[in-house]
Picture 1: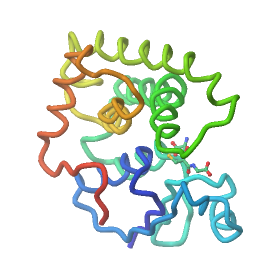
Picture 2: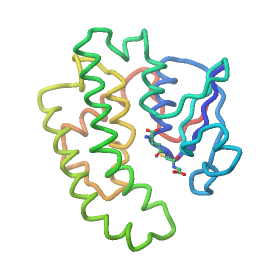
Picture 3: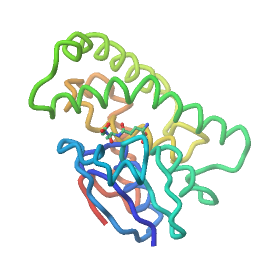
Picture 4: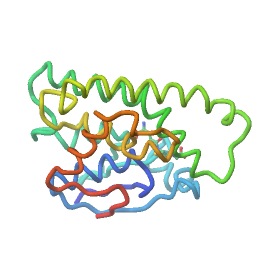
Length: 202
Ligand SMILES: N[C@@H](CCC(=O)N[C@@H](CS)C(=O)NCC(=O)O)C(=O)O
C-alpha cells in the first residue's frame, strides 16, 4: 500500500490527499508535524534529505518527495494528466508557475499566520509576498474568465496543484471575493465527485 507522510495543515500535502480521493486509491497516512519541526528529526531526514512533507512511499519502498512530482506519478494514465503532448506541457506550465509564483507567496503568508511569531526578516518580506500573491490571483482570475479549468477544458492535476493553497488564501489575508472567476472555479472543484476538504486523512 502507498504511504503518505504529511501534515493535515499542509496544502502541498492536501494536493496528494485530494488526488488520492478523486482516484479512490487507499493509502496509509502518517502525520509529520511541521509546527513541531518533525520534518527535521534524524528519523525523517533519513527518509527524505530535504526535510519537507509531503513524501509518498511507494509499495516497493521508493521515496518520492515534491508534491507536484507525486501528483504526476499518481495521475499518470488517468484523465487527471492528459496524454496529449501540448496539454501535458500546459499542465507543467501551471504547476511550475504554482511553485515559483503562487505557493511561495500565498502559502507562505498563510503559514506565517499559523506561526506564534515571525522574525524581522520574515516581517520585512510580507509586503512583497502579498503583492506577488495578488498578482498570482489576478493572473488566475484572468485565465478563468475564458476557461472553466486550467488546461484542456477538463480538471487536471494543474487544477489540484493550484486549488490547494488558493481556496485557503484568505488565511494569508487575501480577499477571494475580489476574484469572482477564481471563486466560481473553487466551487466547481468542490463539486467534483470524490472531493474531500483539506483536513482529511485516509
Ligand atoms: N516544493 C515542495 C514544498 C514542500 C514544503 O514546503 N513543505 C512544507 C510544508 S507545506 C514543509 O515540510 N515544511 C517543513 C520544513 O521545511 O521543515 C512541495 O511542493 O512538496
